[in-house]
Image 1: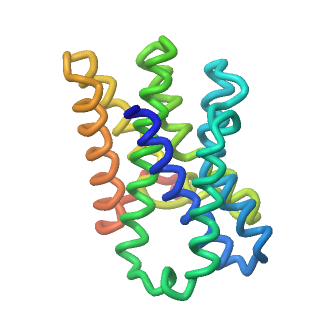
Image 2 (image 1 turned 90 degrees about the vertical axis):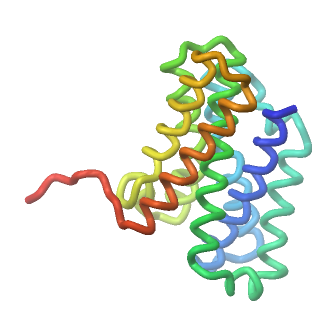
Length: 201
């Protein structure tokens, strides 16, 4: 139940984010819905294929596609209202989606008896995979490769969750701790303009 709730909530949040990117890219309704679907479910599909959960859960359970399309349609019909959200709110929405997916991905990998190291990697892939697909569709360099602390925040949240489970915390408490870590690190990195080191030419 915890995994399903995290997955569906993250699906809606990332669908909204994908739709907003489509609006900024001046895509039509079809393009917006495709981008919403890909952003919301792309990371989870990659995760499921890597752990052998095929067909992916998001393609077997109608609730995932319905949630993704609902998020996209919400932005299409109420985009004037959504676009008035302050930048800080949009950062918070993005950080929430990243946290939910990173934790859901880690939890599912652990449920499939993956090693802690692989569970962390799969949690990170779940968190950032949809955003990478979104940026590729928009012919952009993926955000995780060029700005702020993004994939690193997902990685940190996944590590904290796995460590919490190893230390004897309940899955719910470990998930909460990991999610909060990812969310706070992402928000603070945007606020403080933190970036990983780059090669100086």
